[in-house]
Image (cartoon, rainbow, N blue to C red; front, side, top):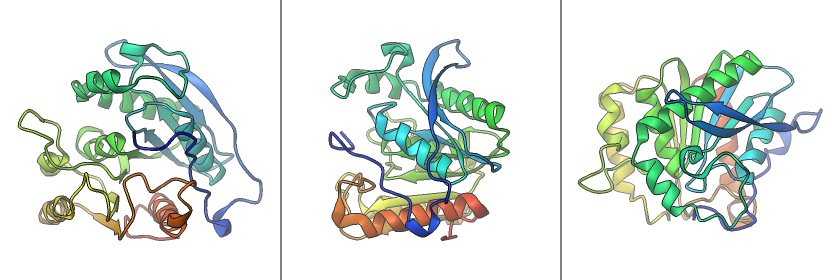
Length: 262
């Protein structure tokens, strides 16, 4: 599992927090292109034209991502976090001990359906908030989904992937971001842990070179010593890395430049 039980998103850096405080969100049920229904969580900012579609880790729509959506809304960015498992597990809220493994395997077998859910989530965010600049941001399984959205989605302003695997996992894997670089057409920010044993530095270097060769605007950041899923408030030793990640994500969304830092 990407995050330990009880994990919560790290706080936004104090100097970037709004005076007005946080923003609440609400559940909604969306319908994808294949008529499947799935749950999502929408947090609307008080103002602003930017929005982010949050692709979770292998647990699907968990409270971690609902709270993260509210963090973004409090920073003036409309947000929607969506679930992968409506087709196999229904749309009801699930407990923390939900056995997600078989559902994650099923969802991964149809990446086209996940991308259709991304599109439905983006459309809902636009409809509810009037957001005109939409980013896709994901973690682990969702990090890969975010990278692939740069190739599969129309009308995005950019994508952010936290520790998403870019290589093919095996010979049957047809959904590797490295294989889709030729079709990627929006700016990309990638954030990785240097101690993440699942993502070797060589993978990131290969992805970096491929994006450069195709002249795709991008910036990949590796935090030395940080593990997979370092973006977690319970990991006090990685507070500096979390703060830097927030500054990079918010800078990118504010400017459209993946190298911007707030």
